[in-house]
Image (cartoon, rainbow, N blue to C red; front, side):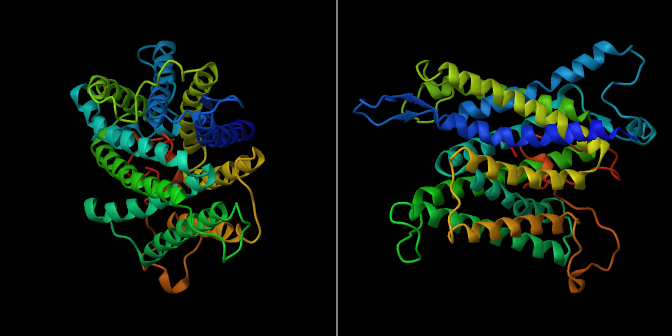
Length: 403
């Protein structure tokens, strides 16, 4: 039994670092890097570099190598790894059939890294155009893509209540987007049903985030296929994915150099890399690494379903944080659909993961089923089921980050 104080510390750390991932990225987007003075005639230019932020995320994932290296150096050669818990050691005899993910086989992790790179960059572009709370809620659509791809590629059977939960999530995302769009569209003239119009910039941003969820879902499905064949420590797998993502971005440097007109540069101009921007980048890297460590520790010590609940609190925390920072406003009655949409997102995710009972007429005939989705694997928490026996592997995902 783990100490309550230790568990409380891990849960608090996961919640704080999870909120920090999105809030810090939006904070960096809002930093003015040129024409910032009141006397400047040109419009202010802000730091909008989603590829650079994706690179920050992958470097943060690579920091997950540090606990693994520390464990290898600290423990004697014949001792058990430091990061392996007692309950996992007891299961070691059940892992003999699994193939260790070593040598060239590690390159399989390049595939989900490419999906993560694409998804995170698209979400970064979308975040530039939408409030951070709507960004976080829109990512709840990930469950829909994962459910569909799992049925198509993994031949997974979804029960009626799970399909119902996916539709509920879809309606929740739609309400969140509609509410945010109308609020922003009515900022100038005041919110009324007659004057407020949909904000095309917000719709474009939400579309990019929704498209990114398709790549994120593909990432999780590929990871699940890999984890059914190979075994690897979760922290080590996260580090490998960070390495492959960083390596891919660096490989793209000479290619991007031949197309100077491309707006999405990998390395921002030196004039934009101010001390504030660099400080935010280091904070993003640290928060990504810390979120992975706290998240994996929470999963080991409590459960994946508990982590699902924590991630919902994280979405609410981001919403509250953005309001406190003055980035967003709560308006009446414009914010009512957003509250309802958020409630539908929470209910749909909890229903899919088995945290709430489905309606009686939708209950499956079988008494047990394994949920596909767990919010914890977003925001740079890939392969969190790595090294866990098939019967004990936590759900494939649910978010509702990549940061």
